Image (cartoon, one colour):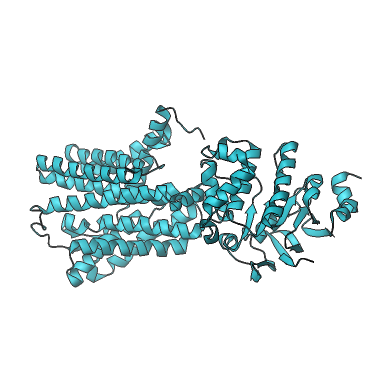
Length: 244
Length: 316
């Protein structure tokens, strides 16, 4: 069995007086996709941002195994965590609208490890998303939601991630585009040997590529499924997503 | 010729042309006026590196400017160093000041950063006023030489010095705009959290920008004691420098180095003209009035007007 690439242990986090996450523990085995499931307002994004250091946890630890080395991510600055190879595709994409596609992509390559391979990785991005090559000089703000999501994923790829965090890739996209985006994440994992933690409320799509999953309810992990089947059969999942 | 090279050659040519024109006029007042205008060009370009490129509004221009001027006073008094050495030292001192201030305050975002920078001038001025060696509240005098090297006229030398500094400042600003640093600063301005999430080392870039911007302001202030042969804290730390640098940049446009150059040239020429024809008291009034007009009618400055007129206007 694969060892863990990312381990969250006993995490409490929130905003000011509001505590969003309560004692969250989660592990992501190397080379697998773990789906973080839950409807709106249950703390998925807060957990993603806590892992990346954008939200400072009040308790608990986040540790990662990168290139055979254990690294404590707790309390580090976001750019430091990205520099270590843990990269986030943020919810709502958070691109720089006035910059071009190519500028947005190059911005992902700030890590020393990624800077040397900018042209190689740009090629990889354009192979994965041919659309982006056609539009490399276009302002990102003038592109469709699906294209922007491609740029957001491409920007993350430019950082040569070891662990990829994807926050709600389906938000605001047409069903057919959601399907494509999810499939792309699945194929990138296989191609690049990525470890992926993906927060998603679109259960049926997420479960197509996920190796395992955890359900977040009111800021706590309510259920951990070791396989996609166990998630499908779980009563919480049925209650929240399938309405049965 | 590549674009950066073309720009630098163009800047050098403009500089030589300016010197030749003023030589033809051959009037001491022309050198003086030119010096003041270029000083504001440099201050505005420097201010815009932090404010326009990264979105952090610095109210401490006067502090960096005065730190440069007092570096000259102290080094001249203690070691009798040449003015050119003093200018370089002033750049280092004000750059270090920028780095220190940035380190203390850049964790503050938006308006809180601006308030913190405002206090820097107050703190430094209090320090100088209570420091007899630096001249205290009554100020310090400098002995102005007759000429300098190939320049028979010291006013001409000061003008050429400020010209080189201003053109150098423009070249640095244009270089930043094209560089990774410029791209990173733009992301900080647009969405700092997203920049951090993308791996942009936000604090480091902001510190670099503050240091470069502060260093340029210090170099702008370094020749001031020789310009007036006298320096006192009120003149050096005057809020006028802060307000002028900001207003001129906002009037010109913050999108690139061209904005502050246009704004500073236009506004300080207007101020100098008014000083001769009307009174020197109305200078801030002019800047204030024009700024209000621009905020109401053209919030993106002269550059914004030009872009809108060429039909490439940004409606965002």
